[in-house]
Image (cartoon, rainbow, N blue to C red; front, side):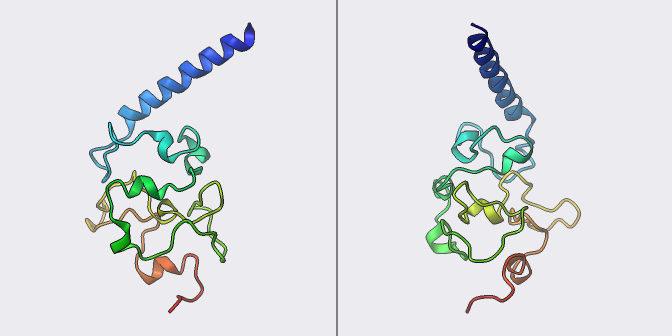
Length: 141
C-alpha cells in the first residue's frame, strides 16, 4: 500500500516538474522552441534536472533530423563511439556515442548576449577549429 502511494505521488511530482519546466524554460530567448513539438523524454533519458540533464537517449539525432537536413550540413560523424577522450561538458549518449547534442546545446540563446554574435548553439564559446580542439589534438584531413 505504501509503495502504491509513493509511486502515485512520485508520478505526480514528475508531472508537475515537467509542467513547471515547460513554463520556466525561457523559450523566447532560446533558438529552439520545443513546446508542442518535442517532449523532454524524446531527448532526455530522465527528467532534465541537474546532472541528469546530460543523460541522452540513443539516436537522438533523429529528433534533430525532424527539422534539420543533416546530410547536407553535417561536419562531424554522429552515432559513433569516439576514439579520443571527450570533456565532461560535451556529453555522449547512454551508449557512449557522439551525437548532435555532444557539441550543441539546443536550449541556449541563438545570440550571445554580450557580443550579439551567433552562438550556433555550441556548448563552448569558441567555434571552428578552436572548438574541434576541445577533443582533437590534431584535425583529421
